[in-house]
Amino acid sequence: MRAREGAGGRGEARGDVRDLRVTAGAALVVGLAVLAVVAPWVAPFDPLAQADLVRTRLLAPLAVGPDGIIRWLGTDQLGRDVLSRLLYGARVSLLVGFLAAFLSAVLGTALGATAALGRSWVDRAVMALTDAALALPRLVLLLALVALFQPSTIVIILVLACTGWMPVARLARAELQGVLARPYAAAARAAGVGRFRLLARHLLPNALTPILVATALGVGNAITLEAGLAFLGLGIPAPAPSWGNMIATGRDALVQAPWIATIPGLAVAAAVVGCNLLADGWRDRLDPRTRGS
Image 1 (tube, rainbow, N blue to C red):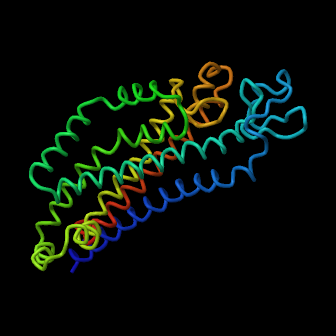
Image 2 (image 1 turned 180 degrees about the vertical axis):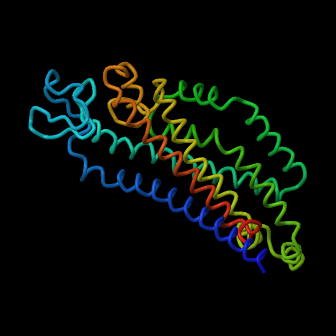
Image 3 (image 1 turned 90 degrees about the horizontal axis):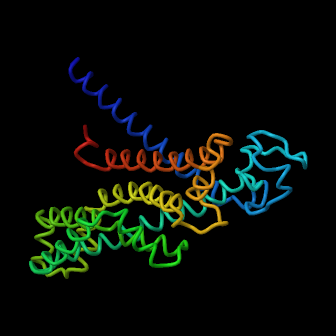
């Protein structure tokens, strides 16, 4: 009896930890997304506005500007309000992260399904293409592709999507092949169910959990990569704010005004941690092997 109670207590503790991770991750991600959506209404200043440069540049957080208004997160070298730029930058960085991860998941799932359901030569061709793409360093490939085109939000999203589908393709292929080996999938095929109907009604719903987890992890990865590209001068072009080019703007004043780069850096870290916590919580909650423990 005591052993059972102890096992039950440990199971409840693990369930509480999983719930806490999901709650914390969702709070971070949803909170940042809400701030990005309401940025035009809550941002105290125009993110591109430059007032009196001499009197407003490099104001520290909580400093009162010459107009009598508090700069909650200070100003940058051009006198622009850091809080306003942070809120508007969240719109760009989160949009890039979510759309790039979604497109990567769609493309990777489509290719993985093609490999799992196709003939043997189709499977070998898709996996050879995937392995060849994985052999290329992603950062080098990103730099090469971005350098070929004029950087913009659409270009960054497409480049990140086209360089991030490979792990999802391998994962989707493995999961779908595992589902195909189960009795109900074999029975559906024996009953004459077509490939597309089999995929939509029987295979994808039972293989979707790891793909969703990989997509959630991909959001944080895409946000980090966008920030890295912007830091190198290949991201969203200035003066449009994004977290990455805000960090790049603040690197020259890191000693004199550390808040310019530190605050958007903390925002990137919060978004990545939130996505990782959400993905880990989803994996443990939706995986039947851990859900019943």
